[in-house]
Image 1: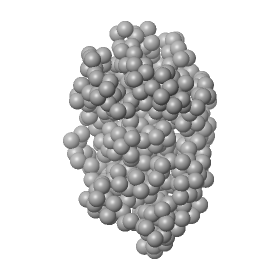
Image 2: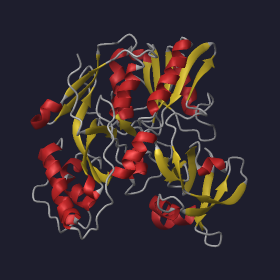
Image 3: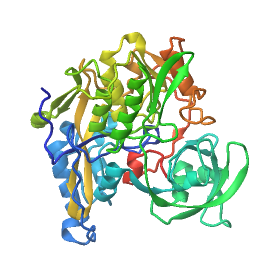
Length: 480
């Protein structure tokens, strides 16, 4: 039997907080660990900061109380942190957990966000934006579209993967080049120029299409619903020299990913697929329930065996649990898996990779692309609905069936094989000729590859991310 799961008032998630561009963003979530997702109550409008219950001081006191009770590394908190020295709640939280930051145990994974925004995203993928994901090259001072989302404004104007954003303005007469923005203020200047993530925010963009043609257009941010598995390229069966290989690209671990994952694995099962390429290159994490479902769908021959261990601090050990593979009608039994990853691959994505390692022969599992971010810990959601505050607290660590965890430097040092490849934005995701996918196909087909180490420097672009992301950007890294 699986150990009892955590109580309903705790919402657990695996996400990489988006303070660092290399992290690729954060993923929080509102679903219960191992149970049916439970929506948070609809919060009342946030009271004014002058209201006593939601004053900065009161919010700081509340956050500290939660950290004292739940934080995974209580010995790495700063006692007596000054409240008056910090002008906002996040800065205060950062100061309290600074020792854990210094040891890379909590790289901005503990943060405060909006209950309202996060709940909308995790339940349905709802967000407001242009509907593209951006990457940037610091040295060349260039920004590219690395993915566009269906049903969103950008794709409606044929802005897709491989396009370059060369200038941004609020009108056609005040366009600023991306080169000038980055020269003056780095990546954050581009983030600021794109404006807040509110419906109706409009920007004029100069776009260079992959063909080289340039055009200037006006784009407005609107509400749209994210499909976690793209209807264009999210999953397919690739005929690789007669070998049938299942490919799936999961954008994020949200509630609505379940049906998409089931459909993909049913197609794989129907076709007799046993070789998989799982593309997590931009996936910063998300709901742990969905990560466990993905494991179940690869566990046809593993039912009842350990998928993951979740361990809380000693004072909360009653919350610790073990998840066993469960039977799913769409499940397959893969004999080889190539996981595509980058520095933006984090948390729930890393959990899936780590949890599958004990069950594949050493020659049949690989990490393709670059080293992952390194986040073997997860958050719980602690809510103060009157203030629309959701505190994401690092509260548990993760291990696979062999009790392997602590991969704070990424998974390249733990997986049996690595295959070096760069993200090829000249080709669409899911194209067998795209470099990362081509190398992954080489691995599962036994054609070999060039390895990399945990210390190998990445040569690709970074995901563009605000210093302080909103709830959606924190859960869908690089999205605007």
